[in-house]
Each structure stands twice: as structure tokens, then as C-alpha cells.
Length: 388
Ligand SMILES: Cc1ncc(COP(=O)(O)O)c(C=O)c1O
Image (cartoon, rainbow, N blue to C red):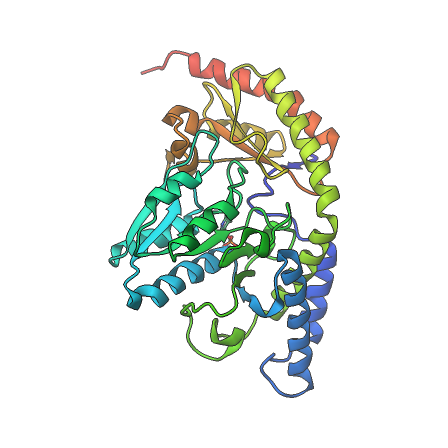
């Protein structure tokens, strides 16, 4: 069966160029980057080159890019590192939007248990955090505000520059999780004027288990890992050379293709969205129609359990995802859709379609063609009387 992969916000397939460069790094650049000899310096040079490519993707200076094990660690260093650095100054208040990824939400929760005051900012029906809401939440003791650039479930893009300006006016730091925007739309640390920004390689056709945190020069962030002096003493441990090198190649390619690929994907996404809305009654798009990353749409299917639809589509060779987290048999409604004000039913009957490099018009048309039949079948099952 020809399978259609529409779950690129979960992860992307690694590019062949990335695999080739990583293979060469594993084989040939095996030296420890901290070693003074030729082998060490060769590995260090490979990391430096990757740092330059990642910095270019973010409009940043390479010296401000810290390599990590992925988006989750980048978010943790930004939040925990800044919270702990600012604690002695009496700043014990942390703010995040209610629709952040768990990497941010659960970090705030953990710090909340250790005495930090935390505030989750509400969003409007399209998933946007308004500057006015942040202005009201900021306090004299706010240490850090963390608002994601693009949301992983609905793709909505936040007004980061305006939010960051408000935080700065009150002396608070601003972090943005740009894991779902980097490589898809222009991300510039200068234009956004943030203090820290997280990205992850596997969301833009790089390897899993490697990411980066951009930290504004001069900003003090306490390390999570203590040990050697790698990454300017901000993250101890011998570097994941091959992963970092792979991330560098993926960043360079993403930057080169971004404009063209973004236009192609948004046309495909719009075709998919319009096709589904026309072919399947009782459907609606969740999120901001204009302010969205080009590859994502999140659609509610009235009277359909998203999990059942996901499984039926998978049996038909189409991979999508739900915004809901299914753990130990209980389907939790998406915290993002709940925060947008949707009731539990709508928050549980939504599917995320996230497109990427290999998707074609023919694939999109196949999805549009099979969906009405699958949805009809699921709806007819829902209507059937429940047997004792
Ligand atoms: C918005 C966002 N932040 C953070 C992460 C975590 O990144 P990683 O998988 O690299 O730890 C993800 C991944 O799903 C994400 O979508």
C-alpha cells in the first residue's frame, strides 16, 4: 500500500543529504571536540560549521547558539536556567501561554511545586495570546515569559515581538519555543527581539535527539547539566557531533528552500482544507486562518471520535494525528482546543493534518476522496443503539 504521511509536526523524515553527512561524521569525525589534537579539532570544526548554519536559520550570531538534545531540553534550560538565575533577585513568577507544548507546561508545573508562582495566559478562539492579556499578567517579580512562536496542534503564529516588548518593559525575560516554526517560516531573533529561542532538528528533516537554544549574548542562564566546559559551560558533556552536524545540514537546506516550499505547502494545505470542508458535512477548521504556519490544518469532525478516525485513516494508509493525548485508554481532550474555548466534544473530535516535503497533490486528493466514506461509516456507528 502507498502510504501518505501527514504528521510532519510530530516528526519529519530525515533528508538523505543529512544522513550522508552524519554517516561521514560518525565514521571520520570521531575525535572528541575538546581534544587539542587533529582529530579533536576536526570534530570541533564540524560543530562550528553546523553552529554557523543554525545561527543563519535564526538570524543570530553563532556564538549565541547552544546545542542540546532537542526542543524539550532547550525549553527546560531556558525556563529552569533563567528561573534559577533570577531567583536571588526575588523574581519568582513565571508566565506561559495555556497552549504551550508539555515541555514548557510541565516545566512550569514542576517549578510551581518548588515555590515559583505561575500564570497561564488564556488565548482567544483562534489560539492567539493577546498582548493585553500579557500586560495584565506581568508583575514586578515576573522572571520569565514563555510563549511559543507557532503551535504544534493548530499552527497558529503568536505576535511574539509585541509580547516580548511588554515583558522587557517590566524587566522580565522572554523565551519563545520556535520548534514548530523554525525551517517553515522566517524566524529571526532580532525581529522578534526575544531573549531565548528553542528549536529542534527533527522538525525540519534533521535527526532526532538534537536541538538548539539561542541565548542572547550576556544573559545569565544556569546550566541543567554540570560537568565539563562544553558549550561555553552551559551544557556539559561530550557533544553529539553527528547529530549536530546533521542539524546543521538540515538548517542550511531548510533556509534555502523555505520560501518556495512554504508557498507549495500552503497551497496543498488550502486544497486539503477546502476539499474536506466541501466533501464532509459537519466540519470546521480550528485556529487562525491567516496567521498559521503553511503546513498545518486542524479540523473538527462533528460526531466523530478523532481517535477512531485516526485509526480508520491509518488502516487506509493515511497517517495523521489527533490533538488529544491518549494515555492508558482515557482520551484527554486537547489542552490547546480547550484553552480556545471549545467544549470537550469538539476538543476530542479534531484531527491535525501536517504536511511536508514529500506530499503531492495526488496524495491530498486521495485523502479528500476517502474521508467522506470513513466519516459516514463512523457516524452511522455512533448513531447505532448501544447494546447491553
Ligand atoms: C512546540 C514544541 N515544543 C517542543 C517540542 C519537543 O521537541 P523534542 O521532540 O525535540 O524534544 C515539540 C515536539 O513535539 C513541539 O512541537
